[in-house]
Image (cartoon, rainbow, N blue to C red; front, side, top):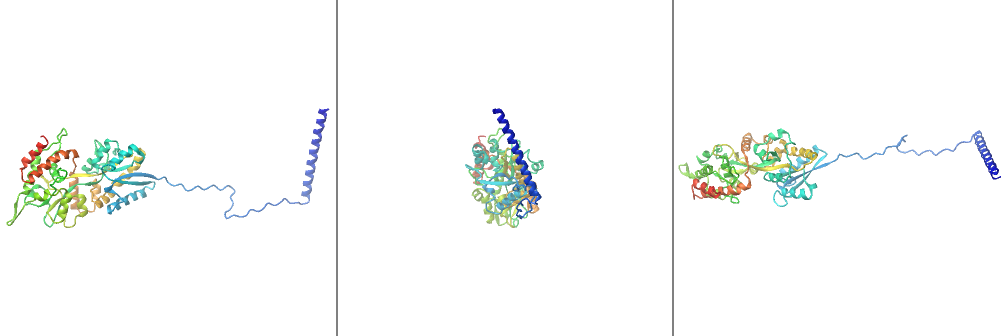
Length: 452
């Protein structure tokens, strides 16, 4: 009975569903026959821009180029944000670099050059404590380059630079930037001494000792020692004659024969010789030169009217000389130009090849002949390349003086040699100029000091 009843319920339900479907269809047809309308949808309100059949894509902000910052550490002496025309020129050159390379910017850090907290000290400290703040490039005193290289703080430049950039350097500049057999720095600013003379008093500058002695040409040079060491004025004469400060084993040494020759020149300069029947004067006054301890003092006294010629640092002369003064090479025994060079070098700190490639762009920008010529002449320093010197705005005669001196200049001796041999040489010079001993005895006494 239960199964039969259930079957009837299913049939009845099916009949009802079919009946309702027929009724619904009848109603719809009836409405259509009477002309009934489907409801109308509201009309969309127009917008300021036409509708698109496809969804409008979302606009993303325009992508900006990635800016890479190159770190450059400089000494206070080369501060591009300091006072004066040279600072303005360097700052402008750094700005122009960023304009030429829109994806690169230069972050300059200026620190003192020497001592605790100085460039080299800070470089060592940062590498150990905070490598992320290390610069890509650094400008150091060339005398510190070997120490930086020995500590692994700077990288070789030879594989990064074109051969033409290397061969354009003056010999002294190549030596200043070399440690061992590797180029680790490029000279950005050099300094050395030459002569300045008064054209109104001398038809032409003396080129050799004989031209100084006969007739006597009064000149100023620093004979007084600094830290009891010989000054560049006398050291130049000694080295130009072939003298050495160390022997082949590297021990302090003095070539007594060469020293006798140099001291003999000074002795002749102190002799009173006739210039006219009524006037006699020596080329140098021992009292005067012994009271001059550096080239800057000699230059100041010369500008004040003393002497016919003087030793002067290039960095002072090319900023301060007027039309009454002219440049000349230093008179030497054989008349060949000679000087001692010091300078600032730019070195590579970055050791990642990708960053080295970018930092090389900045390095080449700074030492390119046009930029180097503009900045060094404004600052009074000398450039490290022949190409930059050719672009200096000076007379042909002045350019010849500088070129001849710079081609022959040598790097300053190491401090340890000056602390030993340099002191012995100063003792000999002072003994001679105070007229206590002969050139031979003074040179022999210097040799005794060194245990020769």
